[in-house]
Amino acid sequence: MTKFQKHEFDDIVQNIINLKEYNNLKKEIHHGISRYDHSMHVARCSYKLCKVFKIDYKEATRSALLHDFFTNSEVKDYNAIKRYRIHPQIALNHSSKYFNLTEKEKDAILTHMFPWTLTIPKYKESWIVSLADKIVSIKEGCNSKLFMPLTTLFLFIINIISIQK
Image (tube, rainbow, N blue to C red; front, side, top):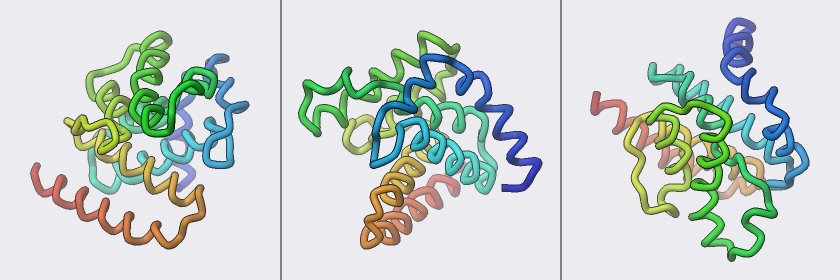
């Protein structure tokens, strides 16, 4: 990221990362790191991908930062599959409580777990956030055998989406 891009990224995320409730994610473990760090990685990846595809990087970056805005205690009573499906709604509820979200941001938060959530993303930015989350999650999980094939598959999907302009 260039110095200008880092400054631009920081401006986009500032009001979210300054929220006390959001900073509680620093105490939540997710993929072996804090959920805060995971969300920052997804936001940076989304920002960069949106810049490449010349789509709305601001809304994608914000929704990527908010996509996992929940605590482990809120999903502890659910099995893994139910957690995959329910946490986007919980994250959207928290995000909506503290921020005015656009329809695009809401969709990206709600559908970032596609295909687990079974709801197809409506916007290119939503696809990017979903892709970025998967790329980052695989990378954080250090599962290098899956990283390249899945990255290639998702980049193919993004390429198809970008053609549909």
